[in-house]
Length: 355
Length: 104
Ligand SMILES: Cc1cc2nc3c(=O)[nH]c(=O)nc-3n(C[C@H](O)[C@H](O)[C@H](O)COP(=O)(O)OP(=O)(O)OC[C@H]3O[C@@H](n4cnc5c(N)ncnc54)[C@H](O)[C@@H]3O)c2cc1C
Image 1 (tube, rainbow over the protein chains, first blue to last red):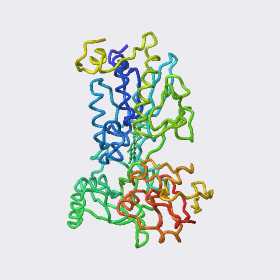
Image 2: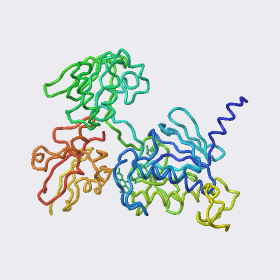
Image 3: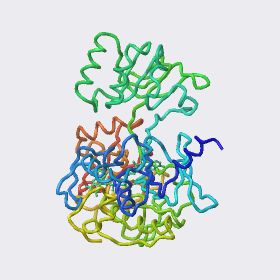
Image 4: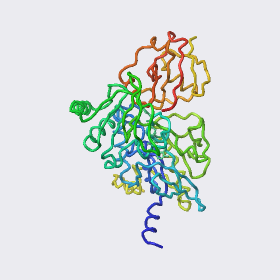
């Protein structure tokens, strides 16, 4: 067998695969790490922190035990600091699309870019679901997606020489519209109103480019796309003045992110209300042995969608997962304050000489 | 007693009892009509988007800047679109009619 293939396939084997890098998934790395288990964390967002980092990085949270006040981003940063000793692997910007149980009882997860990872247990810490770009409400959109309609810029060079239409009023829309002036043949920014949810400096820059005639700003809504075989040639926009056609060969749409359950809904799990995964409250295990659901994504009687609940659930699920991944070993309950074994895993040296 | 008249995403109509001082999002969420209210009313997720009946639009307190900005972010809105987390329920709203918007 090819040596490189062998190396990469063992590199992709973990004790536990965690789906979701929100506060719950991150803290699970810690609880698993204390037990000596190696984790990999996958998130479709390109940064860790889940809702805390994506939806409210600057907002203060007041109900994290022992933190009278901490913002969403600070909480994320503290969790990352706390789990650093365990060297978890991260796969960010990737959706877990496939999930299968292998004949040997282990699990195989497929990521959106095709990578496979293997683990002895799976923690679904997927919160309210995966974040995905909101899409324009226009007919026949699918044919254009990935060909001439995009929700992110992956290949700047591909926009050279195009008549570019950027839609949206937030930082992403303004930053890209400004950035691509000079690269694209023409740049038009369209937003429903002249209120922008963006840095004032970006708005000012956009206005000055507009004044120089290097960028056009139009107020309006996207109404229809025109083109053949996914090649955009024009769009129809709806504004106060009625309908108008605009030449455009590439469209970048920035309508923010929505949250949807995503592929998890197709994995045969027992869903409450079609959205939350039913678990027991001893192990937070789903109806499939070895598959646990923790944090906002799970449901059990009395469930509260709070960050602190996710932390508690992560600890119990980790202990239960240990018994599955290390069936031959005895699970020893220990405190971080007094166990030198835990302290060496944490790479700290505590005061105590015991254990 | 005061009631809210709701048309859900399937077009079915419901009458929901109001609770003074609650946000309309919370009334909808707790009635199991598919409104998630992920951000708990912080005007951050737009999952509580509703379209208010035209005759009620004017009677409601006007939307504040952060609500307007969030609505502008959505790919499609209507003339009387609101985020229901920003509408505080009181007896005065008895009969308020609204439709839950499609998930964006
Ligand atoms: C504005 C706001 C204010 C809040 N205030 C508080 C508060 O004061 N106190 C409190 O306790 N809670 C608060 N919450 C709720 C709190 O943020 C959530 O309970 C918490 O984020 C849940 O953590 P989680 O890790 O379970 O899920 P999330 O934070 O939702 O993270 C889940 C992650 O999983 C990823 N994911 C899902 N499916 C997939 C997939 N198939 N592949 C790859 N990745 C996937 C998602 O992209 C996401 O990043 C607030 C929430 C909001 C939005």
